[in-house]
Length: 71
Image (cartoon, rainbow, N blue to C red):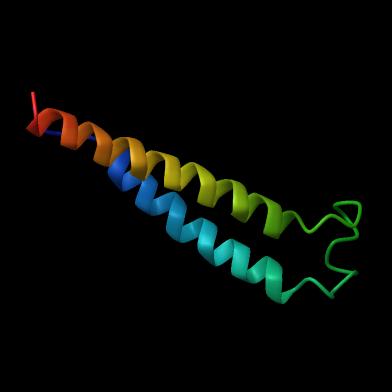
């Protein structure tokens, strides 16, 4: 069967991570927004983590598809 769930998961996490990272970058100067998270820009850091995870899923998904084509 040619179903690989890593590619849609990678795309989803990459897109959402990119949007969250941009939001974190644009709201960096707003200290009142991040008072509840002890002054940490949680949007920026979670967006970066989501981008890394999404990139890894895309990499492993494409690598898996390439390995299936060349036995």
